[in-house]
Amino acid sequence: MFSLINKSVVITGGGSGIGRAISLLFAKQGAAVNILELNEAAAQDTVAEIRLQGGIAHAYACNVTNQDAVKTVFASIGRVDILINNAGIAHVGNLEKTSEEDFDRIFSVNVKGAYNCLYTAVPMMKEVKGGVILNMASVASSVGIADRFAYSMSKGAILTMTLSIAKDYLNHNIRCNCISPARVHTPFVDGFLAKNYPNNIEEMFEKLSASQPIGRMAKPEEIAFLALYLCSDEAGFVTGCDYPIDGGFIRLNN
Ligand SMILES: NC(=O)c1ccc[n+]([C@@H]2O[C@H](COP(=O)([O-])OP(=O)(O)OC[C@H]3O[C@@H](n4cnc5c(N)ncnc54)[C@H](O)[C@@H]3O)[C@@H](O)[C@H]2O)c1
Image 1 (tube, protein in one colour):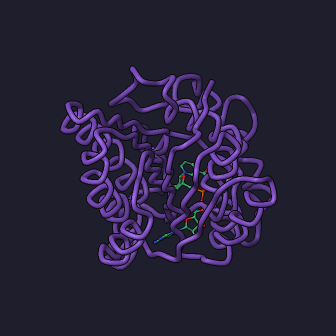
Image 2 (cartoon, helix red, strand yellow):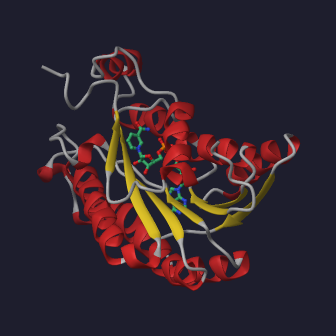
């Protein structure tokens, strides 16, 4: 079950956190993992760990906001059976604390980056008569979260992008779903705590943990297991869906 032998996977942001955990698990299941990363050293680190375990992986330095760079990398990979749009960045602030620069930065990575990879990968998938796409959304896609104006909008776009792709490419044997995690303990969380709450990191960490009714953050590996199911042949009937993985955040927070 859940074998990915002979599958070529492209994952963005595989050098850290959730993307790293997905890369390691997919390689373990037999996939050839291609990591597109802004941080090449981090991608190389994931690749080294995969190879150490006998897996197949390649790192590509790539800023997903740049369509030409994305096209060049996909051309050298050659075949894409599974695309995981995972790279994303955070921003804390309500409308009035979101500058035009903040807005453009968040949208260019979180929305345009995913679009660039889809724009390049979908024709390649059509050519081989099928494929699977998984987009990393967030509970912020469907729940109002304080002080996450630009981030929430960008993740809302990921959710509707998922539905649009799933609908338009049904007849091309391309499935497309998204995952909506609540808080996952990754460098992404540590980074924004350090940046936004430098004087009370521990207190904020506890607060963020408690905001999941289950009482903790997710581990990146727990997100990777859901990703594996959704990208496997066993999930052949699953398309056009958003999967919360949230410790009860959406439905039990009352
Ligand atoms: N951690 C959470 O609590 C959480 C919750 C819900 C959703 N998410 C989403 O999951 C995804 C992964 O989050 P994470 O916590 O693992 O983040 P992370 O910061 O640990 O890793 C993200 C990776 O993406 C790479 N990246 C950033 N911009 C890039 C670009 N322009 N081109 C290529 N690579 C780029 C970074 O270098 C980094 O290695 C993001 O889309 C995030 O919004 C995270």
